[in-house]
Image (cartoon, rainbow, N blue to C red; front, top):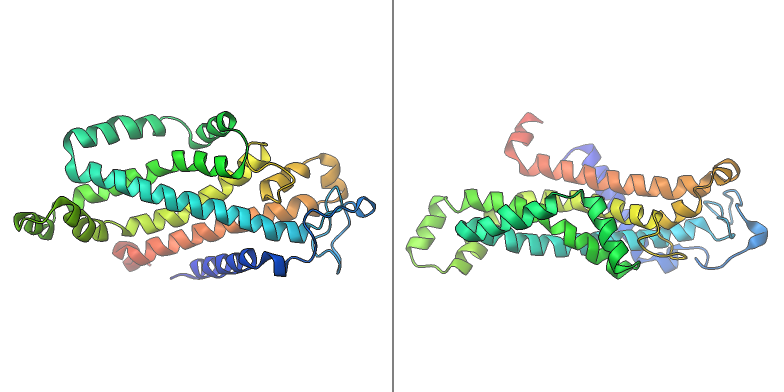
Length: 272
């Protein structure tokens, strides 16, 4: 695995650690305001400075990692399970099942830009963490379904699958024991890249006021609260810190995905 992938693994492991132990790592109450200490510069008391209401940015970034990882893990897990199930059935049975899934259902979802569809769904459902996760899951399963469908179409023609079918194995057993284990590798790469997409989508929707509502310490909310030109002039740290947190997290998951693709694909590994 290349060095960038190792960096991504280390960064994500550190992020998960500080998110899990946020009450211990955070130095201040994330909701405590101090109007006399607005936009304070980074110091020994406030590592990343304070925001417009005097709240500690370091502590809010730490708790923001919890929200980002919760959204990413939940969306990717549910989307992968639903997409794998639907894609495997469509690829294995083919015929009218595949026509309905890939010919109509997937095409309907893929016809719209993902972010615009998410904005429409969140606007319809309302703001909130649970509704945000639901909206991202509804639009996220299609990528996994299309990927698994393509893999299953190939694996179902292998000799060992044909032999299992000739021996009278049930479709459920063939799919679970023979097809999916040999078609799941690309899904691992897709899931790591999906984490980056979910984190970025959460931050984007929260920035637009359609995600986690303030005063929750979402990185997108922190960016929205610090987006004024005066803030960038007087206290650039209030905008830079959450922006760097989003960028590093997205890059880390992308590095992991690239490393897994290189590791799991023999052609990529040989080229490397």
